[in-house]
Length: 333
Ligand code: SF4
Ligand SMILES: [Zn+2]
Ligand SMILES: [Zn+2]
Image (cartoon, helix red, strand yellow):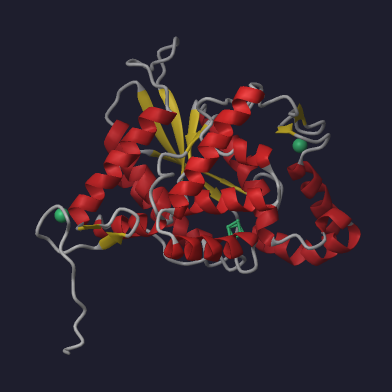
């Protein structure tokens, strides 16, 4: 025994493999992993995005796709893949958009990576901060959480991500509006999707699962349709590809993440996958089937959707969650 780690050979060529897909039994080198991710991404793009041969709008302007970027690996891979696949089209404009939550030591550096990548791909880079939107920095929101929990039952026990998720969704909608986006692309990978499906199912929230992106065949009024071209690509493969391709990515974690329900779901999905390789794909296939059946029974997804009395955003309640939280914040500060 020398203790050396045995390196597997790629299943498609003689190079060293950098990932093993247990669910397919294949070992892939960097080059073959990249081409496989590109192929899966293109296929999903075609399936999720109904782009005519010439997508130019009547006024001569291009079809605009806002790509939500964070400086992390998923959105970096999404941005570079989309630029590679459809970036050359004259009738389509890709815009990179980053929401700045105001988290010390985390967002500022990661935003610079996102900007660097967008610039290297010659794409427009837009940002919007929680402060500009009137929520204040996320670091401040976290400090006010105990006070908000004291005064409002609904706020009791909420984690930072509960606020942040609501604010980010609003921020992305506002960015989409600012750039005149026709579609928004998000970097969710297969693990993210499986985690969301599992979290919604365990809370009995079928409607919520059905409303998960992509919104290609189930448009929600008043919302820019979301697409998720990386949804079949496991996180580990995205990470390996980002490193192999030398994409500028930020490796830090958000200091407010610990304790979130997603963390729990992340480890459940990881153990499911290691016990039964292919479990993540199975969860996503199940969602697609549930969505089909649900849409057959309820073709109109917007039936329980109203407009917020304060801001007009679509919501399932009288006053939307972001306006409610904004009110709590102003009371607590
Ligand atoms: S981990 Fe939570 S608090 Fe941190 S950026 Fe993500 S959603 Fe916001
Ligand atoms: Zn190979
Ligand atoms: Zn509102």
